[in-house]
Length: 419
Image (cartoon, rainbow, N blue to C red; front, top):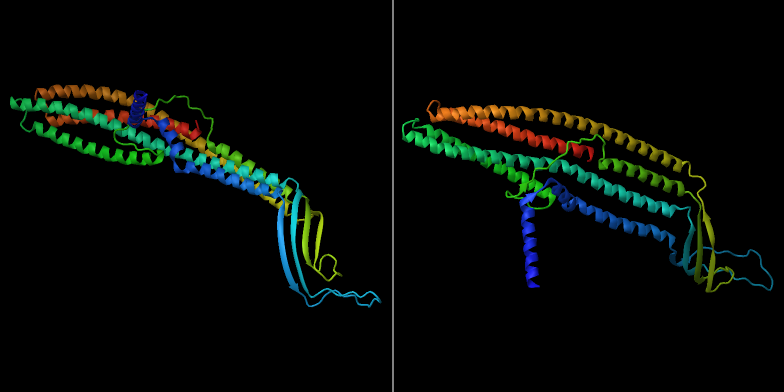
């Protein structure tokens, strides 16, 4: 049993190390949707909605009111004529009563259900807004991820250039030793190696800043040892917009419709049953000047027959709000289509540049090979050789840069249209 536990722990440890050493773009998206602080608002909104619905449902429960009152009044009701053999005492000017009232809603025209529907619509809209905000962060993740990838490629090319110069430095020192090259030829290469070290430092600082920002977005630590994987992107670039904003617009319309239902029902008649029991002086019999218990029960109807067209005006206002949502949706689709066209042009331009870069590199390799032979024979100086080597390095760097930018453009295209 202990062997199994140890094996399992070793497996977990190895998985943890692997997950830290390699990271894909899709994993970054998943981590963003899992760890970004904004995600926590979904649970908070659901908890708030449960409480709000419970509050609304209490409208169907009976309400209990308690009243205690003591008053003194300047005058009381009196019989203005004397009735023989039937003396009637007027009530006291100091009066007291204590009562408890129970009210039970019987019918309110569906207002409670409509109010609950509004809260549910509000929850869906707010949660979808969170989804929209998270989705918009994917563009930042894209930019950071591919910037780090570009730095990794720059570092790899720079390492290859350094290794080549290290080998060339040995050859040059040997040529100087046997009098085939000028005594300062090695100094030029050493200076170039120092310049390469400066470029390494710049790449390291840039990568550190980028990874720190990406770490904050996705919620895990990404260090210099983390190898970002180059994503494979299909070339099927559809123009069908499937962004979460589209669903948000639809939910906002449903939210408006839910508010319309509340407005249409708030002026419906309300039927309420009630019962009151109490103890006071006087009681319900005003002619009995003593403390008495009493009760009364019944049904009452409340109906706001005329509201000066207030409900109609609110409905019109909500309809305008609906029209505004439609307009925002049209603008969003228009702006998104423009962005897609711009990205498509960028993709075409970069694809063309890559083909040209590949041709340039082939030519630069031939030129460098000739320069290498000329350097060995003392025909050119180390400076001339380094110039040609740098030209090849920059050409390869441009090719890698355009390839990374092409991937970024394709990812941005898919991010813009929601695929």
